[in-house]
Length: 301
Ligand SMILES: [Fe+2]
Image 1 (tube, rainbow, N blue to C red):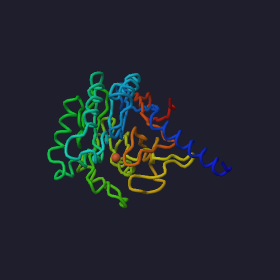
Image 2: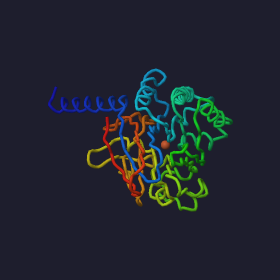
Image 3: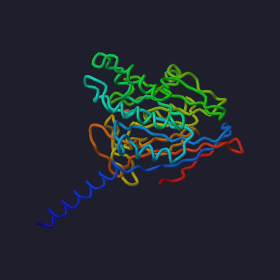
Image 4: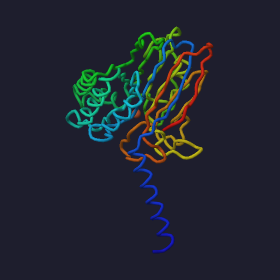
């Protein structure tokens, strides 16, 4: 074997090993936030973009990992399944998603906002008649509180949770736009300034607009971390095929607010994650002694 062939096969083995490891391992990234608006401490576990993947039989490994973090609430930020799996019937990934929601909701409330894949099942009603209603009804019966352009108070914690559902045009390839406040308000109303507003918004492309709208904290997914993450650079590509997108993963602070983008858990179309392991976010919210909001990354495990 020539030196070149040896090096190529070594590189191939390295890439295969990293992809395999990143597809199957789960990293927990932790963040603590303080705000004078928060009356009672809360622990969120945030998951996004599972895309029908299973970690262990019926997601037992994922469920164990989430419950070990002792969340007060689980927040699902969309794309729990993949729309193209809906050929002529409800796919088994919906059954798996219901099992996951059911297992988690037996321990704590599960809140669910829609990603483009859940919405696409609705947008393509002609191809999948009644599939959207049936799927969402199954999620509700399994124990999820669906926030489809809706909001709710989380007990007496001082936190109001919003779930944003975007229209299909917001996800179109080649389109890079912003969401004026008027449009956002037509979806989810005005931000409640009295409470700490947490926004579940699948697409991070509109991050500055979410901050302007008034979200104190925003959780996104959708970009899968940019699929391939390059050291010191970040995510390689967005679902709209933009290279090196501004907001592919991690903690951002725009307009004095805080935004966290999850790398997600699964894949679709291209079964690849590179330097980009499947990820859960653990976010702890606490009240602050002073009124000034404070944010901090507390690492990963
Ligand atoms: Fe998505």
